[in-house]
Amino acid sequence: MEKSKVYFTNEISKDSLVKIYEKLGVELPGKVAVKLHSGEQGNQNYLRPDFVEALVKRVNGTVVECNTAYPGARNTTEKHKKLMEEHEWSKYFNVDIMDAEGPDMELDIPNGLQIKKNYVGKHLANYDSMLVLSHFKGHAMGGFGGALKQLSIGCASSYGKAYIHGAGDASGDMFKTDQIKFVKSMGDAASSVHKYFNGKIVYINAMVNISIDCDCNGNASAPCMKNIGILASTDPVAIDQACLDIVYNSNDPGKEKLIERIENKKGAYIIETAEKLNTGSKKYELININ
Image (cartoon, rainbow, N blue to C red; front, top):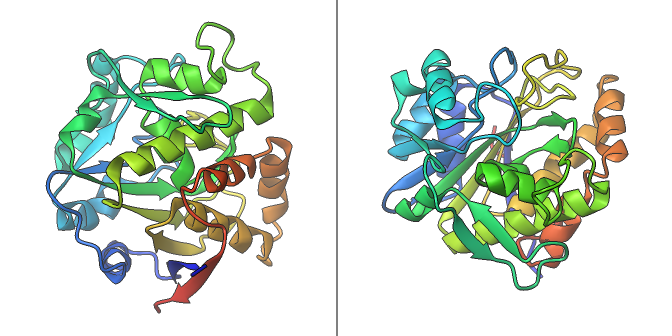
């Protein structure tokens, strides 16, 4: 089986984002959704609009997000739109809260290892292709956040997020689910969005501001590792696996905090699950484009 290609550059700039996208040799067709993290109010680590501006405009994309399932500045459409203005997303781009109104779009996962359905923002149907632009970092619940988390929790509606967290039960305490069932549910959900776009989807992970906490945390820990670079692939499993391998092989002493979080939260199960569902491969070739 041919290894998936993952491109890497240690140049972290607006131009290098565009360059690494173009290295993929894929022109995203039609109306392009750019899925990224808007950043919770108070968070200091999220990717900024001016940093990603050239890339989003290169693909003529619309920035898309979905509401959260927990209290904060993004759990209603009204508040989320206000935060989009405060964080200047609306200043730079067209912005779409995909679950602004229901009913949710349901994606079937017939071979799901934990869940058989995924509930995503209904506006997903308005897009022909997607650029998943992820800030790679730790995560208090999932261990780490990369391309697969953006596909799963990121594209899920508010209800869908609770459903994934609850491993198929949105009615309980979403923060007290069996950890492995939760992470497997993320892998299932990620596979459904990847397959929905049927090859018209690409992934870019920025390994910068690498905190042990997600951008959903308004009081996130300061970065524990130095900035590393930017990766791109058409395979979400390969790109996340490459990011993990880079962390584990790093000489940065700060990696120990991140690795502890990833392992404590069984983070690798999202990759294992997605690979079992033929979403991608952990076998990759890392191509340095510097």
